[in-house]
Length: 218
Image (cartoon, rainbow, N blue to C red):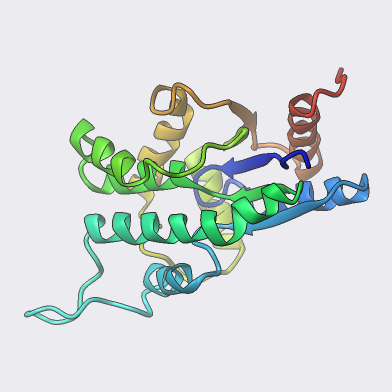
């Protein structure tokens, strides 16, 4: 059996990664293609704990009271979740010929943890090292959007504040994603302007997936 394709959707919080992961999955299934949607943090045991950390429901005890985990602790937790995610969910589906679309992957770890770790090459190198065994995607779609627009979208969706919602940090992350090819030179990365209507963005996402599948596109 031919393996399925592994596709990742990336971008800052508010770029629309969750929305367009779902739309892409629905579109593939509508064409009769087996497709599986997933996300990181995953729905596995470590991923579930990470989501509690991100929303402030789980903190680390310290001498001076509870505190959020350090960037190194977060990086290790994300890496452990990723290994479990790949082994338990991504690879089994790919081997069954299913296209897997993930809302975020190790790009987010390198972007978020290296930035919160000071943004230096040493931090980035270390985060990459602990994710060295992460299977590379066949295609990564980066949804580019101005930080102010992403911030407005985060407000409108009414979700509680998360630990990475700092505006200055999100601006640094947006800059990182604009030049993400420099950090992952061997990966197949395509940028998509996400500061448009959902239908326009979805059309471009599907166009790139069709191109990956070898279909003729306009």
